[in-house]
Image 1: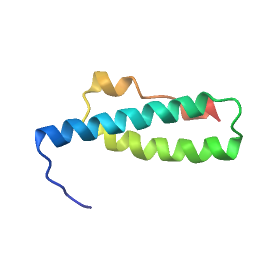
Image 2 (image 1 turned 30 degrees about the vertical axis):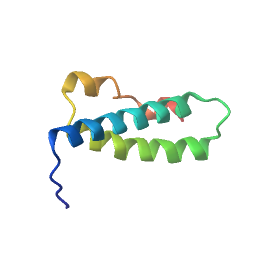
Image 3 (image 1 turned 120 degrees about the horizontal axis):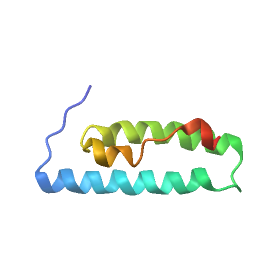
Length: 73
């Protein structure tokens, strides 16, 4: 396990970057042009980024990104 100290401004920036990455992956998961293997890789990455975001987001904000990955595969 690694630990990093962030200032408040850096923490907000990291939260913003993670939110934008989650948004992009959600768009990709909705894209019918992508095949199952690619969507599976995106879903695995989504889980990792979601867990990172969960460490700093409020439950209300987090619920926006909680989803059933199996629905998109």
